Image (cartoon, rainbow, N blue to C red; front, side):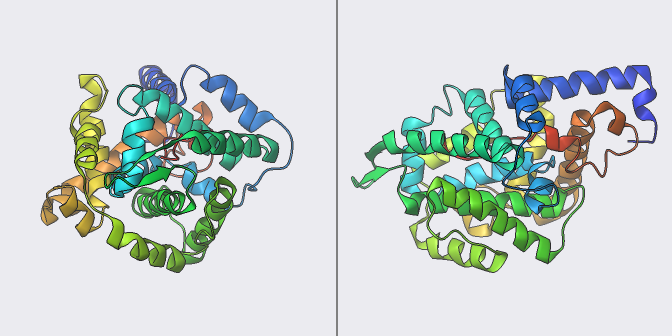
Length: 315
C-alpha cells in the first residue's frame, strides 16, 4: 500500500472493516479481551520480542501455512481418524480455528503463566481423546508419536509459508532458531525430543513418511478445506488464492496422495503472485491504524503480530 493510504477516508474505512471482519473470524467474540490479556499483562514470556517465533507467527503468511498444515497432517491415518472423530472441524470449524488461534497467540506472545495454563488445558483434552484407528488399532491423542507428527507438519508448514510469503523473511540461522523456539511449545505439549533445527525437522518428516497415506477421511477433509470452506461467496475468491498457495507448498508425494493437480507454470506465476497479493492485503488490513499507511510491507511482528492467525494445534 502506498505511503499515507490510511489517510484516505474511504480506504481507511475499508481497511478497518476488513480488519475487523478478519479478526472476528480468527479470534471470535472473545478476541478483543484475549488480545488485551495476551499483550498487556505484565510478566515474563516464553519468547522475547527478538525471537524468530514472534516474527513467523505474527505474519499473514500463517494463513497459508495453516491450510498447508491441515492438509499435510491429514495424511497420517491415525491422526486423521482422531480429527474426524473428535475435533468437530465440520460442525464448528470457526470455533476450532479460534481456539487454535488463541493457543498460538498465548504461547507465542503471552505471559509464561498464561502459556503454561493454555498448554495444560490442551493436554487435558488430549488425555480424554481416545478411539480406534482405521486398522482397528487403539489410539490416544496424547500419544507422543502422534503429537510429534502434528508438531512437525505444523512447524514445517509455517516455516515454508513464511519463507515464501513472509513480509521479512529470515536467514537460515534464524529459521533454525524458529524451529528451536517451537520445540519449547512442542515439548510442553508432550512431544518427545522435538526437532531443534531445520535439519532435524527434515529428518523427522522423512521418518514419518512410511506411515503416511490418504485415507477416505483425509480426502474428505481436503475437499472440505479446499472446495467447501464455510465462507460467504464474496470471501471465497481470496480464500481460493490462499488455498492454492498452500497446495503449491506441499511436497509432491502429498499432492499425489490427496489427488491435487500440479501445473508448474501456473503455480510459479499466477498462484505465487496471488498468494503474495492476498497476504499483503491481510497484512495491511490487520495492521494497527498508524502502520497501515506506510508499513504494510514490513509489519511482520508489529501490527499483524497482535492478531496471530490460524494454525493447527489440535484442540
